[in-house]
Image 1 (tube, helix red, strand yellow):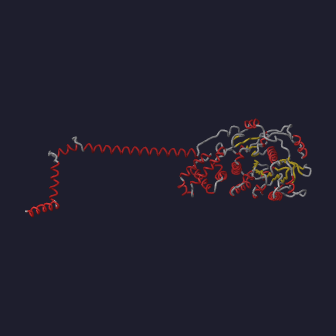
Image 2 (spheres, rainbow, N blue to C red):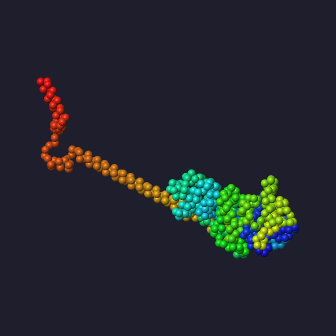
Image 3 (spheres, rainbow, N blue to C red):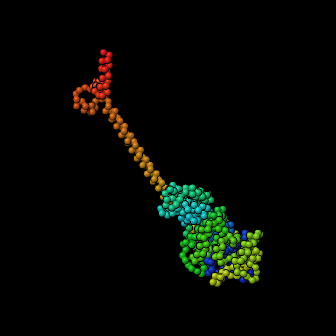
Length: 522
């Protein structure tokens, strides 16, 4: 289809081609359906269609089977005949097998090129969501980011943030006067959550070299858009890490890309698989952030497509912005399921040929109820559509082919070596070392001063003992020069004291008493 991504055949005989107009592909979309209804194949054929139209694609490979985009399905595949028959049914006359240009990414650096960001770029809002912090703890985290900014300290990896939090805890009293209460208990809680994140391998997400968005928006010489595939099978073991990373990436695209208005085709299409993980227990501030990004990022030329099991997983304000929809079968076993199915059916523009609610309940694997934006961005009439077969390999490729694709990538070697430049950890470590040296120097000087004072006291004591000895000294020679008389004896000194006392008042009374007694006796 010219100017569109071919999706499949609709109508009563499935011969009417259904497509997603590239002009409105940046108006976002939804791919929903229960497990096993064909969402992964739909995601695969959409990625193929966008790539052939020259639009770069980013998607997460949750189950590992989307790596097949880098391989070609052989004629010996067990579904070869079924796919050929389906292609003929829907009028897919130029159906061929082919591979597509793929770049493999992996947070853990095992199944693709490492993909990283920095703590500063992640920001306190998303990091608080990732660490599941309370409001008070998030407040302390915001203070830490503010201090880092004011002090000119880059927060690149987790050890930078951990070192900064230690400093914040040590200076909590001073910081509380400037920014509000900084409880050391909150600092400790954040440190514990960072430890949990480390144990989940989250430290691999943070560091340099950080991802350059231009590496996600590459096109090939033949005009095809490159498909970036994030290995997410292991990452799904930490669902909050998975959802937070994809939301960060979406936010970065929103912040950095220039306005382009309404382009003839998107600059990038972003598929957010397992979208319910983004909104589960999400605080209102985060949901508002997603809504803002979804509403405004289309003017940057980016189309966002949420993939989930049920449309009810996506908040209503965001769901209302998803104009292109592919709805696979929904199961309605409970009253709640039936209510959600009815609500999903009510969001489509009715088709007089069938009941939308019944169609959503009845479509089989590989079929879907579709509605795409048409002229002037109006939603098209809902249609039952037989999804076209994929051209690339259905299922995961082997490790050998994956290794070849990684080695031949245009960014091979760019992100593999971790760079650890000076940042908050090094700055604070140097400050602590300098402070320790200053304290040690001050202590050394204090000890030296104390020792000098003690030595002076000893010398003074020795001098006093020397002057009071029998050995003739300067003072004794001086006394001798003043008088040649010999020193008075002990008896002479006692006599002097007695005479002095007798001259006084007390002495006179004693004398009168003695003489009076003598006269009386006489």
